[in-house]
Amino acid sequence: MTHSVILLGGPDSGKTNYVGRLWTALDAGSGQLKAAQQPDDITFVLEVADHLYSGNFAPRSEHTDQRRDFEVVVVDQAGGQETAIVVPDISGELWRNAVLDCEIAPDWMEELRRAHGALLFIRVGSDQDVRPLDWVTSQRMLAKLGGTEAPGLATQVMLCELIRFLEVTLAERADGSLPRFSVVVSAWDLVDAQKFAQGPRAYLEREYPLLAGRLADIDRLDVRVFGLSVVGGDLKADAAYREDFLEVGLDGHGWVTLEDELGIWRKDGDLTLPVAWVVGV
Amino acid sequence: MSRDCTFDGCTVGETGVCALEHDPSTCKHHIAARDSGAGSAAEVEGESDLAEPAEDLGAPVLEKPAGAASFPSSRTLGPDFVSSMMGSRYVTVVGILGDPESGKTACLASLYLLVSNAQLEGWSFADSRSLIGFEEIARGAREWNEGQPPDQMTVHTEMADDRRPGFLHLRLLRQADGHRVDFALPDLPGEWTTELVCSARADRFDFLKSAEVIWVVVDGRALMDRERRQGVISRLGQLAGRIKSIFDGEIPRMMIVVTHRDHGELSESIETRIAAELAKRDVVARICQIAPFSECGDVRAGFGLSELMEATVEQLRCEVDFWPSSAPEEGSRSYIAFRRDR
Image (cartoon, one colour):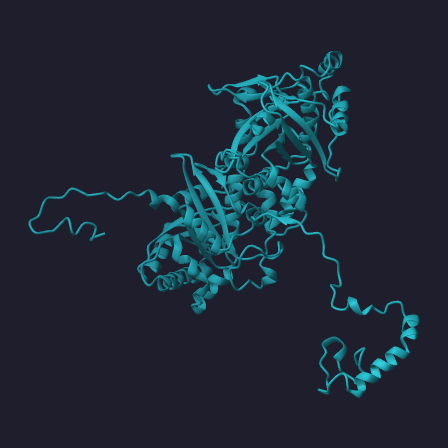
């Protein structure tokens, strides 16, 4: 059985780095999902993983027009049925254009309809983040005063629209339950201890009120929020961490956070969890 | 003259109909065309490479562009969409009327900015089916077409750069009780209201009949200006009269939304005059002062909007006393007369 999992998110939201890291986690075989066999084509994921191996994040892929699919057959840790998952990576630019034009290439529409679930990425502290309009800017634009450069579409509006797209396209799961949808807040290692304890949902409420409100009001999708750090630290700014990372290697670095029954956000070294939950094998 | 005929204006080659109503096989012009065509076929080919082969005639001139799959639009919504939404959940339709430049758009823009910045006190965003419509309004990107306001409310499949009247949808969560309220807020040209007042053109306001509340938006600066005040108040009265005639009497709750609170507060005497003017038509309206934007003074932008939203849904919470206790009265037939007096 083949499951297709769609990765959505704006430019610079951490999708590509996650796919690269996901492959190494599947290959290591210590997570809830593990690779059942070596996939035929791993060029794309190896390229991304290479950046991580050398202590750098993969560059943004917004100028890559062609789609890059990562296909792998996975099996549950418990040794259940083998499942092929396809994770098409797509530039954030394409999703942004889809929102602006309200349309998308027919093959991607088909991909969305076939998908079994989706992961939505938002990155903490991204320089591509567009804040919502404020009164001063809006008033100038309404009065046509000029001299105000029109800011791009606010990130939270784009994300809400992407969720709307998923609502109208994703089909129900085979057992009739709602399609699953993971919201992944990447670069979660950048937040301080207090925000970490409050969790990514609280972060979204503070930074993206429209998105947080929308997530709380979805009745067509089963939503779960994760925090994610692909390598567990900042390879760009934290030189000491990078040294340690290069010395020890990628394995064991990186984690996701998820909320337990008591409402406490805990780290888990299993980076396959956001996909495992969506696939639900 | 067509390719198959020498007679001027005859299109028998393309349409098969002879202009002289002759049988094409015997018409001398037609035959002549065929003969001369046959004789000069080589020349024609030699003359121009642009001559099209006959089988291409009628074929599409341009190649079909690669189509893209569309998602449902999230610009303004047509009345049909709102009707279907009302079929599945309770939607509070608000009728928003007001002359051009009274601040209707600013009011909607500011409401959107408040929710998108999580600053609408007591409320938070839950959903909107017209998010891009709101975004366009807040950017002033939706101008009525060069001062030529559209004539009818249309559906949402129009061009992005053409402002169409329609509804904006906003679902808000009331933090006090966790209740979700769906608002359908129409974005209409002010000229419609002006025409309603001046010439009783009410056919476009059919949607008002499903409205829970009517906001009449008035420019607060005009009310504070002594020279313009009387005219504005009198027009309010006329508008109330028109609304009454749309409803044949009983009208929904009416609220006078006075914008530009940042330019000053309405004095009590003005409020009394408005109330007196409306009373001439037996209309009672609550006055709400708001400041969608803040240009002067220390009134913050978005002032009064949270109270306005609260007042808009206020009545919904008013519960009817199921069976008020009263002293039994012989022969009053209370059971049958239950609720007759309400």
